[in-house]
Amino acid sequence: MVQWQPVILCGGSGTRLWPLSREAFPKQFIRSDSAHSLFQETLLRFKDHTAFASPLVVSHENHRFLVAEQMRQIKQAAQALILEPVARNTAPALTLAALYALSKDSESLLLVLPSDHALKHPSALNDLLPQATELALSGKIVTFGIAPDRPETGYGYLLTEGNNLMAFVEKPDSETALNYLASGKYLWNSGMLAMKASTWISELDKYAPEILSACTQAMASASQDQLFVRPEAAAFATCPALASDYAVMEKTQNGAVLRLQAGWSDVGSWDAFKDLLPQDESGNAIQGDVFSYLSSGNLVQSNSRFVATLGVQDLIVVETPDAVLVASKSQAQNVKQVVQYLQLNQRPEAENHTRVARPWGFYETVDRGERFQVKRITVLPGQALSKQMHHHRSEHWVVVKGTASVTRGEEVRLLTENESVYIPVGTIHRLENPGTIDLELIEVQSGAYLGEDDIVRFEDRYHRHETPT
Image (tube, rainbow, N blue to C red):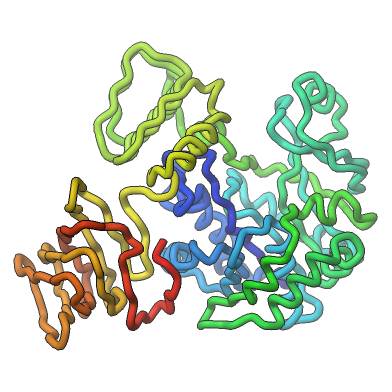
């Protein structure tokens, strides 16, 4: 029986769904109308399915622990987590995975999927596997096309003739999109691919040898820490940043296409996000603590506070603890303008939520002001912060749940609920959770500088040597 190697591309920044997605928490990690994130939903398509090996995940280095934690939550194992030291688009990411797969199996078959797309009917993809297998074994690179149901101007298109891929077409204007829809010869480009790993490498060598050379050098000198595979950074940094379409698919003579009817969406805007959600009789998609009166056609999402809408139509309203977006549906694609403004002004709302994931758990900013900051810290059972020191701040910890093992200088002590400890400036310290339930504590920081980069690490079980992010 032929077994496919899933390759999950998980390196995007996903700021088009700001404020829910951020640079440090891209859209693949957010949830729509599911208990799982888009990334987790992608992984669950293969879980316990004999046609698939454990997935290869390619992610940015900065998201490695977020990826690992979301995989742990759904009890999904991985072949490896390949970590890009810098973002270089989908062709280099796919090439890293292909080289890794070939090092394990020279006949490896790759099913390549973005981690931030949605399929309402994922079994439809599995139904196409026999055809995809036959085409891939014959040396084809298979792309999956989506039959358009509207004249969409936000997607690229595929010109097809049967299973033959004739051409890739860039995003059209409205009139051209109407003509594509009427012709029946054009499909949306889903970005999903299937091929032999060796076929991808062969075609890449013809059409983008610079990518192959850089990735080969990077993987030849890669280091591995448990499941984390780190391509050599300097070599990978020389790699051209190209999408798979531009690097190979628009040039290859070995392209093929299969028509996929799976309720696909790239979830590329708040408008598309709304379409994934159940809607009331007035066309509203509502999530969280929301009251809607005489309102229609809206997406209203509350994540921390009560939100009310009165007599409004066709709005996107998204509330988070530190930011609120209010936009006309017709302007949903322009969220990038907000993100650019925040980045230009070096605002933290572009990068992080108030709740920030860490390999040991997470912290959440509760309050901040001049010379002080208050955080709620949650440490998962058996996990520990690095052994560290701060030059500019002192910390006061109060345990509210669980048991804490606290190292302060040469002293090690256990703290339980309602007990506290003070960490002076310059004191080497560590916080651990030796228990079987989450450790929750309140941290009050005070000092002249309270940035996350004021951390000097001495020991760290997660091998973090870079400036914290």
